[in-house]
Structure formats: C-alpha cells, structure tokens
Image (cartoon, rainbow, N blue to C red):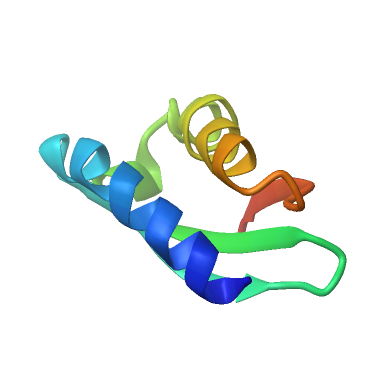
Length: 73
C-alpha cells in the first residue's frame, strides 16, 4: 500500500513544487489513513488544509479507493 501512495504522491508533487511547497509521506496506517507532512511554502500557507483535503486527499482516494483519509502531521 505504501508504494501505491508514494506513486500517487509523485503525481501530485509537481503541482505543489510549482508553488514552492512539497509533501512528505510519513505513514500509511493499517486502517487506510495516510499521514503526510507539508513542507516548504505549503507548511505555513493558510490554504494548506484545503490543498490537503481538496487536492491531495481527493487525488489519492481516486487512485487508491482503500484509502479513507489523508492527514497532516
């Protein structure tokens, strides 16, 4: 599962990097929760929660239906 999530994040990462940010995979739990850390410009951005839920989570869940949520740590 972790490899699938890494592959999905690799597809999202260029969009984040365009704005000076990035995302790091921290963990994938057994119950389908992906834990990530936003870095760079994304870390302190007021829109980071929207980016996380409406961008990263939406994309990952479309690619990997077993994933239930994406959380920032």
